[in-house]
Image (cartoon, rainbow, N blue to C red; front, side, top):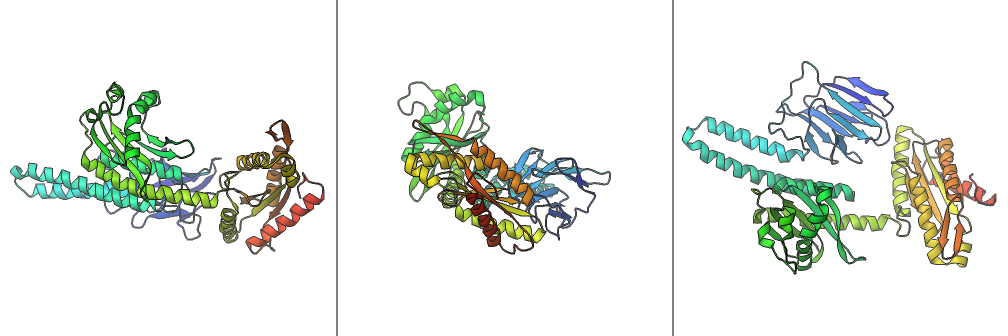
Length: 483
């Protein structure tokens, strides 16, 4: 297998035909990786590519920050999947891998022809069971084949369910991104129930209603009638905390509606289970199908209940992490999260001998604006400042509010000159910002201090100290300055 790795400018970072048998190869930024790629977004050990013992080409995402995209489909961080020669991989925004078959390659394709990237054990265990039963059938008289095949089908279902539960339990403990969590749960719910579509709805306490957080396979043109058809069901499950599963005709005329909206939407079968956390319902997990021969059963409901209980815990955990690391006024990271990321990125920069820079900014005359315009107006100023900082970042930059009127930006792999360019962009954008509060148009400016790693910066605190010195100099110059 020939592996060609390029960046977004087309520069070739690697071109070779490594041995993918045995342990295969590991691609990452660490010096002991088989293929070392030093780019932003590449983890120390990013992915492993190898032929397994059955001759199937597999890829495992080891510790990527955001997952690996395989032919346009995302593989979640930490998961293993069957891939094919000719696949195109996106490891991050700037690193792409092309797997090019060679004449001597031998590849055993996944027999079911399913190109979807389910977690590996969900398909590999099924393959093992089917091969075992095929071997048993070959040794028994034909009159026993039908009975053996029936047992095979039942065992395949149970093995897939067990594998799915284990996959979900492991994944939900490791996924910290809310969008990735939603994508993963929807995919798994569809895989184990045989549903065609799935949706997660969570209760918004401020608006006092259920809101759709994520959905899979819903057609935009049909969404309005679909939501009208299922709204009574999902609200009933949320309010009662009791699941509802079965053919759609069981749920006709629920509530006060007179017409059968489920029939109008063409929905054949449904399963809706509540998301419960500490005795409280926080939302619902919904799956359905429009195929008339696919009827959701009580067994599908039990599987979804297992998923929903784990999902509710994961959602609560992510919310708690969010509350602990996000500034409530601006929506960007808070000081605790910034200091944590600073430690991580500084160590990484030192290890790989890369530049790292920091920008500190204080709003000019914020105390005076607070006295003149009041707290609500100043919160608007802080929100707008946070938006300016957030929209100026690259994917691996870190922005945070670290004080009453203080903001910070961490720029990995960026020199002092590069950080100064970013600071100038921030200053110019902020200087054009007008915040309207009542009848007042408030002009916003800030003072900026820039620092960068050097031989004298041996710890993260040195970077902060140098930026603080520069910030004080900018303030002495009258504000709206960069130093």
